[in-house]
Image 1 (spheres, rainbow, N blue to C red):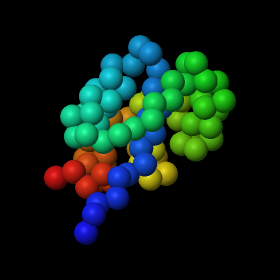
Image 2 (image 1 turned 45 degrees about the horizontal axis):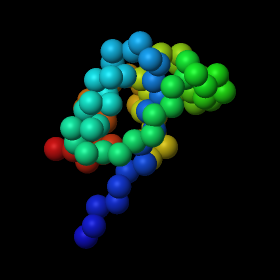
Image 3 (image 1 turned 90 degrees about the horizontal axis):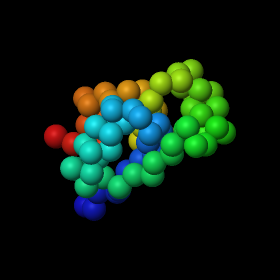
Image 4 (image 1 turned 90 degrees about the vertical axis):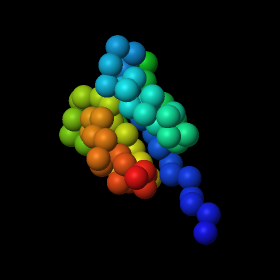
Length: 82
């Protein structure tokens, strides 16, 4: 059985250290992702608040499930990382 690649979008800002950690973590596990910088994209920032009620980053959307913050146990569970 071939494992389906998860769809991952990460909402970040340029100065966020946790955003960098989350991106490094995804890269280390060879998980492809799309990055959306909410500083440069105000409409994405509004979408993020609507979706999560949060203004903080990082927020990862893993197969459309939001994970607020660099919550490694939740990220691992949703991505199937052991």
